[in-house]
Length: 78
Ligand code: SF4
Image 1 (cartoon, helix red, strand yellow):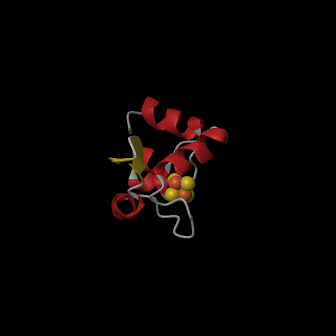
Image 2: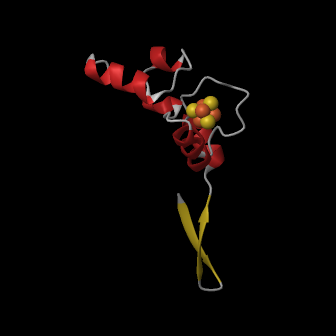
């Protein structure tokens, strides 16, 4: 996140383009790609985590539930 000041106010610029380049999510039609604050907020409301919290194989299932994440951690796969 990049900060700058305008009129004494701290402005936080979104690094969506940069984040999009690094995003591991394979769900291409999603408009939230790179907007990490929107992404995590969207998934948390549904008791889920963003795709970047999962392994490549687990992400590809599109099951982003807390339960799936927990199973992976308990199995030592995360
Ligand atoms: S993790 Fe979810 S919200 Fe985030 S980019 Fe992928 S599909 Fe979109």
